[in-house]
Image 1 (cartoon, one colour):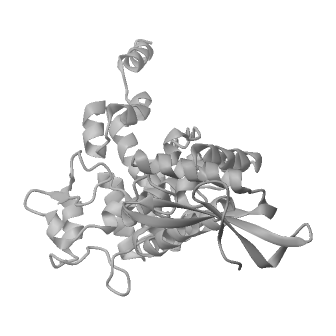
Image 2 (image 1 turned 180 degrees about the horizontal axis):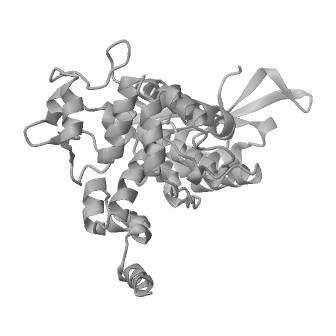
Image 3 (image 1 turned 180 degrees about the vertical axis):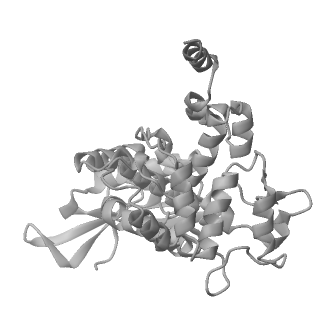
Length: 368
């Protein structure tokens, strides 16, 4: 590289490239300098072959001086934000210990749908428009709305974690993106006959049987059940304290009937240990395949394609609320027992509650 020489523009220099050629002549590189807090700073602007000249370099120098005068960050001073792929890798490592199925589903969604779209971008380069483009591509692939939403939620979680982990002064661009509307409310619940058949079939698998029964009789979610420790069970008052409820601001305990208390007493769980544990004595992180195999053996889901009509472990919680409604319990009571954040979440059970209209019809039939 040749020596810097002055141009006719103040603070703008040029130098000849010894190995670079442009129009059969040595290419020319333009540099500028300016003072930053009393120190001279050099900045490479670019090559003549890239379209730069002394005048354009002078314009850039004038912009740098303006930025310094107004206290703005210069390009060289701006914090380099991590690449999305690096933030995603750190998130997936975290997910192995903190997400259901050790982050397997998140890994699949990232590799199949997010990586190609975002990996080459730094976090500060990603805008709401980029996310809208992703959403449009996923829709064009004819993916289910729920799948599209899962992908967007994964992006949101990766970005939010990155903001905390890297202490970034940046907002999540997904805030300007509307999530797809998903109709995933479960419609079907276990009948009493189906529930009895299921519990009978689960008898050989004691832990799984008792977990299913606990959900059916308390409305506890799977993650809440696997998080119960010995100290969380209050046998005297017949309650289980939920230390990590989904809606932390709501009731953090459920009530135990006497027969459920008797079953839990059999475990004789030390205060610091989990009630239900895997073969290593650790917390159970995912529902065993045995549950699904039993459901298949009982043919509860044969011929049913709509996932809202298929019976799963979560259907046990849905069944708890549905049976309460069928027994005539008030919506407010169901809301409190289900620990719903709002009454609107409980309204889906309203149609099951017997009302005066049904009683009037029944009374009419009794008169004849």
